[in-house]
Image 1 (cartoon, rainbow, N blue to C red):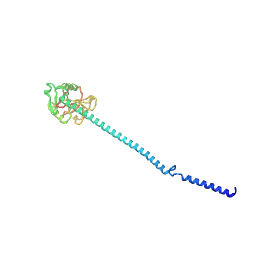
Image 2 (image 1 turned 30 degrees about the vertical axis):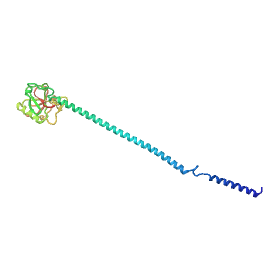
Image 3 (image 1 turned 90 degrees about the horizontal axis):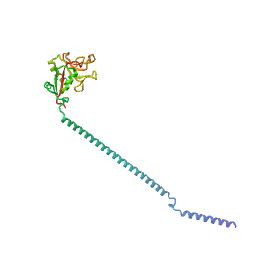
Image 4 (image 1 turned 180 degrees about the vertical axis):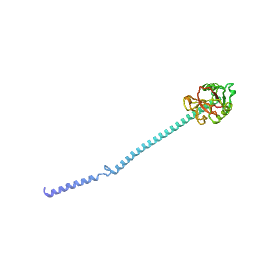
Length: 253
């Protein structure tokens, strides 16, 4: 083969290969295998779908929490209302019991009636009370027993007006006599209580100067003291015999 023929065949082969290559590329479609825009849009739509699903889940959770919160609030309100009703019912019952007690309770005379002839000697010296001023002399304990057995208690003096009312009688009758009262510091040395009422002696007092002094270490009972020019209060030995004053409270429930 001469040189010319070799060059012709070479050129012809190259031309055929080129045409074949061009025709191959000409058959490709922009959307068949490599549509990047479409793929991006699809991916974006998928992400949006996932987010929307998450949002739906969050919204559902929020709704459930809201319902739970409302249920709890409702339960608390109902519980509070029940407690209120229970409390009101208890108060109503307590008031009814008090009302019933008031209807059936008689005026207090320490649970007993004052018999004759003691009752005929009672003196209305102070509003709400009557007093028995004895002429008998007894120890503090026997005087207390006498008062109790006759529906009374040893007198408890709680105001200046009451004190003056009693002094107005015993001071004029016989200022040289001493009279037992209900005051005592048994079991509470130095602190006196009215045993007739259970109240601590405080506020108004009428003790003689430098009294009470627990002289001899054994003075535990209170009296109007005749050694004083004004019959002031004094602590004394409980076993000694003196007159005494009983008190009965009237019209007090």
